[in-house]
Amino acid sequence: MAHSLRPALVACLLACVLPAAAQAPVIHDIAPVSGSSLVESGRELEPFVARYQVIADGRNLGEATLQLVQLAPRRWRVDLDMSGRGLFRLAGIHAEQSTVFEDTAGGFLPLSQGTVRRHLFNNKRITGTYDWSNRQAVWEGDVKEGREAPVALQPGDLSGLLINLAVIRDAEPGRELRYRYVDNGRAKPHAYAVAAETESVAVGELSYDAMRVTRQPDPGDDEQTVIWVARGVPTPIRMLKREDGVDSYDLRLVDYTGAQ
Image 1 (cartoon, rainbow, N blue to C red):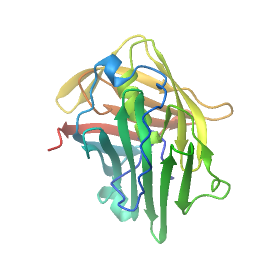
Image 2: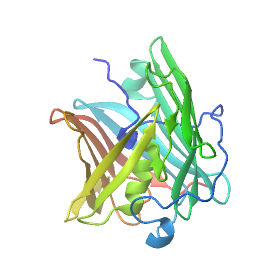
Image 3: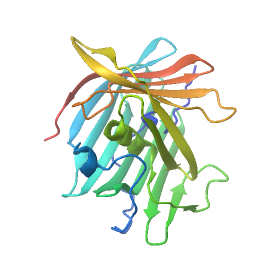
Image 4: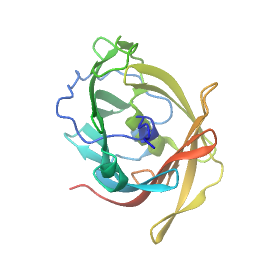
């Protein structure tokens, strides 16, 4: 059975860098985003490379890699790659997504985005630019019909991959998190609830005291995303998507290292 890979499971699932993704002008007067900034929270970005086991419908599909790379003192790139091993290779599935952004005093500022999805003979490539000078985002390539028009940008807008980093930055027990998702030609609010109590989540032989962060489903939407994050860990411990109450995609951290 073929599985649909969507950019909102870490984005919130996909990435690896796409060199063709353009970089938008940098604007420094963007207002702070919802939640705390890195300056306020004291949680600075750290380069890392993390490996995840990908499970779907009870089957091990292979591995995904999530990485954060520093390009300049304030400029970063976050990548997610789901391809190349296990059932991914057998099914011919290759999915990558990447966002280049700046870490500003007011929060994360997306600049450009690239997405590649391959499944057997189907090959799709999309590039996006967040043009803060004109306050609009545009996507080119294999964009879905109806999503070709520019999207008006608002302060605090984030791509799906950046929302995952923002959740790690902002999560506190019992807190509500609100972001505006602007990705692949569409924009919509994302609301997350952080559980009041932490829970133990195993990663190999280690166990982390993690916060469960649940995205509230849209009206009439049966999809739910849950992310587990732990203090001191720069990447999600686990990322789970449910459809109609059934686990769809489950990414479980295998290990992570600081990027050199």
